[in-house]
Image (cartoon, rainbow, N blue to C red; front, side, top):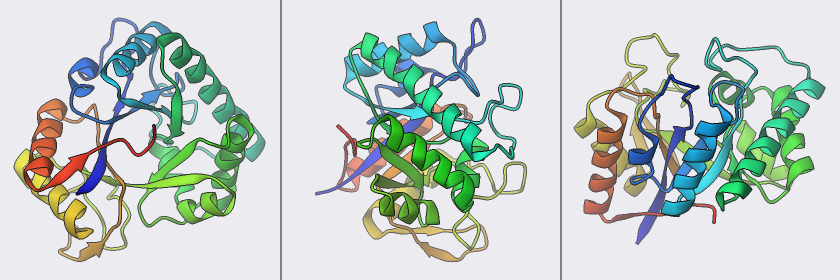
Length: 253
């Protein structure tokens, strides 16, 4: 049977301000990208989400970011490589401690927002993230954009990698994500999204905004936790995948 991982960005509340429904999403996904405090997340909230992930047997990844709470980590930053490496080490280490206390472990790293998009093609910042992962734990898996150079670069450095596709985001003809704020960048129709993801999982294809059919081999599908109706969307995707003969399983133990 064909299998694929289903992941979501969680732990993104802060204090009294909550974002998304982590508990409900953890009943649907197989992997959870947990914020590390730089773009979102407070210690108590992160610990609670990690405990629920452990209870449900959901794999955990460190969702590392630029230091950008105000911009939710979605603003590009020209961070010096040495500073970026230290920032990523710090975030992974913090989440590892919380995960250990929650009875689980950090199995992979998924950069967030602007950092994710930048390192997909920027070798200088990509190398800083790779160096940080190797310094902390070379067994960590790097999750990155399907088809992006970062995956080959990380693999050449000795890291295991997993290619990711986005359920709720539109694609340009070159395989990159459409910039947020542009027409078609954020998708909201659960049925349309579910159909796209079944095609992706079974045939390795996804349609770009202009109608171009992209070949996209991905081991994981992301549903953003802050998307409108995120839980219902994730449930619809899961049901469609299973009905289409695709199993849901974490790529990392």
